[in-house]
Amino acid sequence: MDHKQAAIDILNEVGKDNIVAAAHCATRLRLVVKDEDKIDQKGLDGNSAVKGTFRVNGQYQIIIGPGDVDKVYDQLIGLTGLKEVTPDALKEVAAKDQKKNPLMDLIKVLSDIFVPLIPALIAGGLLMALNNVLVSPGLFGPKALVGMYPGIKGLTEMINTFASAPFAFCLSYWDSRPHDALGVMPIWAPQWV
Image (tube, rainbow, N blue to C red):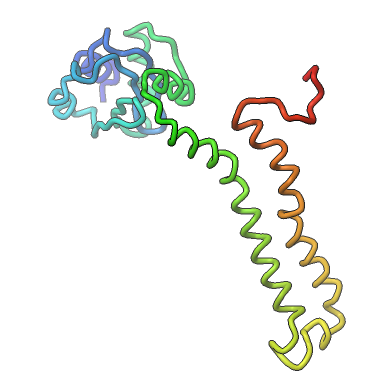
């Protein structure tokens, strides 16, 4: 693939003055454009360097492929004089021009707060279930497994401790994570931080 020619063709089809910002990931050029209606979609579809295109979250993404996208991106940056940005910075640029949906913003904040907790809560719940199997009488005999085999009492106590930990430390997590997601300072933080 001639990377410079691919970049020139993409610029002609998207429009040099139409590109606000550009970045790339492993396989795609990610562009924020001023007006998607000015893009020559048929030209991009007929371009042999382009494997496909789609729009997502205010970005116009052009699939180039691994090993080639970074070289085409470098040529594109050289031809346009655009500043190189990361995909995360490009998301911020794309978000500036999008209309905000307050409900979606609320859902995003809640997911940013609670999603990282899910694995710990699942592990804690599974360990609690295992602990209940070990200490419940009548499951494997007249007494609990811990009563029939006193040697596993220490193991049972350790499992119970590990099972309780995610729920016990949930409060300390709660004191820091929402503040990060909302961009505010925790109540307990010193004022000079």
